[in-house]
Image 1 (tube, rainbow, N blue to C red):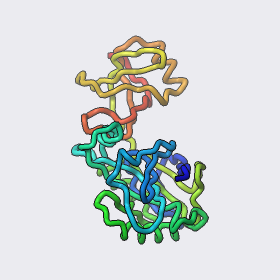
Image 2: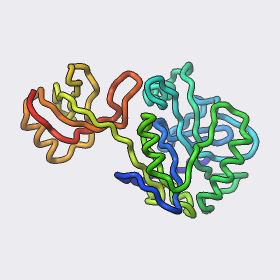
Image 3: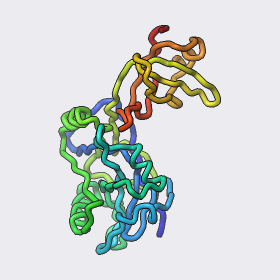
Image 4: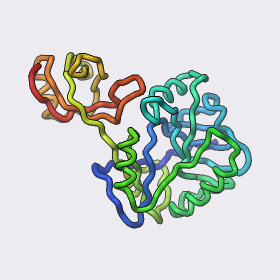
Length: 257
C-alpha cells in the first residue's frame, strides 16, 4: 500500500454560480482515502482496522471522500464520527466518495474531473456496501446549493472546476470551499493563557465551547485589555449534536456585561 496525499481546497468567502464548475455539499467528517482492503486519513494514519465495513471487493480502486456519522440535531455529527475514530465500534459511519485516484491499478489523476466522476460513479455502483455512497453534485447553481446547505445546517459547499486533474498533495484554486457560517452573540466568561483560550457562554449563561484559533491582532488586543465578562459576536461551523458551537471564531468584541 502506497500512501497518497489527497488534493486540498482553497477557501472562498462567498458562493458563486459559474459555468464550467460543479458544486457539492461539504460534509462535516474525516477526510479518508479508501482502497479495496485498506483505508487511511489525509495525514497518513492507517484506519483499516477501525473501519472494517469500508473494505470492498471487485475492481481495484482508491477512493477519496469524507467519513461522516449521522446526527439528530445536525445532518453530520462531528463528535460522533470522532467517537468512532477513537474506538467506539457501536457508532455507525458512512463513507461519501467524491473522487477516484487509482482505477484497475492505474493512476488516473491526470484525467479531467468529469471523466474521473464518471469512473467513480461506475465503481461505487458496483460496490455492494451500504456504508459507501456517492457524493451528489450539480452544475453551475452554486448559490442555490449553498443556500440549501445553510438551511439544512450543513457545513457549506465545495466548488470544483471542470476539465482539471487531481493534484495529489497540493492545495489548488480548482477546488474551493465556502463555509455556511453560523453567527451568534455570546458572553466571554473566562480567558486563559498558554495558549490563549476564550470560554464562551450564551447570553443566558449556558456554556457553548471555547475559542483557541482564528484571533486577529485587533481581537486579541481587545481580549487582553478587557476583563471578563463581556459580549462578543462569533462565527462557527454550525452546532454540534450536544448543542456546542462547532469550531467558533470571534468576529468582534461588543461591550461589557
